[in-house]
Image: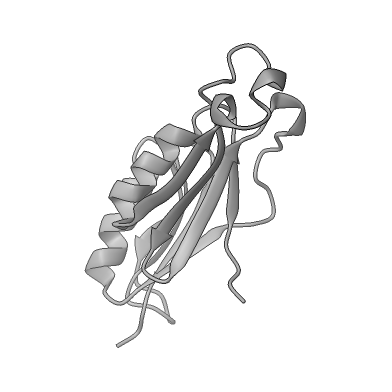
Length: 135
């Protein structure tokens, strides 16, 4: 079994996943737009280029996402995407990229459980926790 976060966006999913691919060092392995799907004839005006489904693989893990039609979109609440890395330097680099043009809700810093931990909401509205391992 693999459990993966599924992130929803309001029309900027492709931009967000291109950013995550670069920031996290992953690879987008699948993307389908609404206009290229079997439901292309039912797509509202302006949604043909919106993302119906995307898969970004980072190591053995995946982050999935799509652009949700406005009536189905809900701002992320009560959850965060958690990233664990081996070094505080990697954690700080990722945290800085995720919080750039977003909001750092807890600065990246040493804690009693980690040499580097921080929380941020990125420019796309997705909440993240970045934790580096105690070595």
